[in-house]
Length: 77
Image 1 (cartoon, one colour):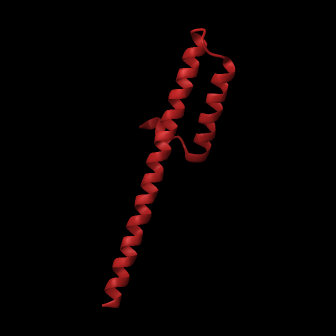
Image 2 (cartoon, rainbow, N blue to C red):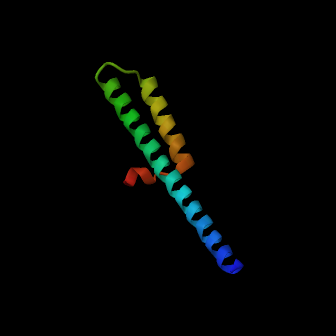
Image 3 (cartoon, rainbow, N blue to C red):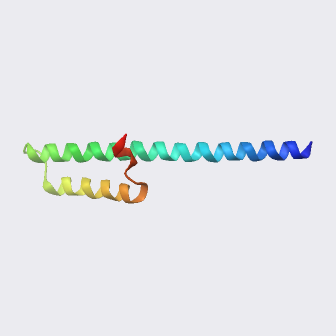
């Protein structure tokens, strides 16, 4: 009986770990998408007279930092 409970507990822990990993992945993808939208908005504003090159460069740096930390998988979604 104890063996069964140990296996069930181990399987539940594995499921929780996989769930957390998937949640982290989805959150990173969502954050990357938001950063990409901010970069696009900053570039659009710069090109149409309402924004600055500094804002575009900052948005690009933020996006590049996110890619360095989390990868660029969100760009392929």
